[in-house]
Amino acid sequence: MSEIILNVNNIDDIISLFGSFDENVNLLQRQYDVSILSRGNDIRINGDEKAVKEAASAIRTLLEMIRKGESVSEQSIRYVSSMVSEGAQEEITQLCGDGICVTVSGKVVKPKTVGQKKYIDAISKNTIVLGVGPAGTGKTYLAVAMAVKAFKAHEINKIILTRPAVEAGEKLGFLPGDLQNKVDPYLRPLYDALFDMLGADSFAKQMERGCIEVAPLAYMRGRTLDDAFIILDEAQNTTREQFKMFLTRLGFNSKMVITGDITQIDLPDSRKSGLIDAMRVLKGINDIEITRFSEKDVVRHKLVQDIIRAYERSYNSEEKKSK
Image (cartoon, rainbow, N blue to C red):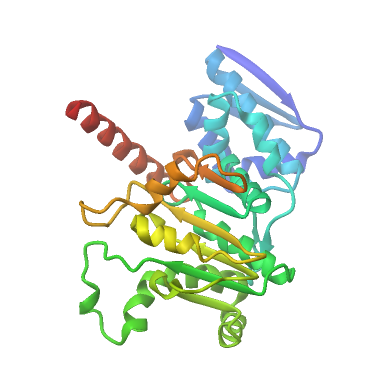
């Protein structure tokens, strides 16, 4: 058995670390199979030597986040634990700081993982950014947040959000209404993100003024998009021709962010994904950056990470058998 005692100057930091009904510290105890107790300004960690060292490192990192104004949640504990196991916990301190923007409910939107921070930095520094990774990593949400930030700062005049209307097992033709009614369900994640950032009334006003446009990818053909922040979502479902068409819409003083998950391609088997092709073709071009997310960047329910890992193991096993 081993013990490490951490002395914490501010008792409020310990209260924040432990959480309501000790929910945070209970999660840490299960994570590392250690005992964690507080006595005054001391936190005592007991258990196996290796586990105690890792738990102490995770607690130090969480306390540093608390001192910088961050809150501790189940997701942040899982993420800190995964970074500690890789010896990369020092990178987490980059995440603490100002947010991108504030939602109508008062929530500050900011990157929650190192991968998300690199993505935000890439968008700030480059004209075109490809964000590629699994579901739940915040690719679309953070891109919309950056678009809203640029719009409110009058850096651009228009936000354009688009995605290909490709069916994921369902038939588009069976949906009721005209074309706009049929494609609206495909654009719903983009609407939801904008409602979050702007509120329904402000969103409706900017749509009426033409400052915000949400449309299927087919509507982009033949246009030149100046002074705009353009987001292409679900880009894995574009063909090579569609992807090239989209890229060549870029006008002066505009940014493009392209998001997609290459494990969720809904194109017919004979069609090659434009996103996969672009990752090869555009690699190394100045002012274009490709940011890759992993399952560690997932900020949804813990099961989403487990599901992604399970599918990755299955795909890797099938590839080995095929070879």
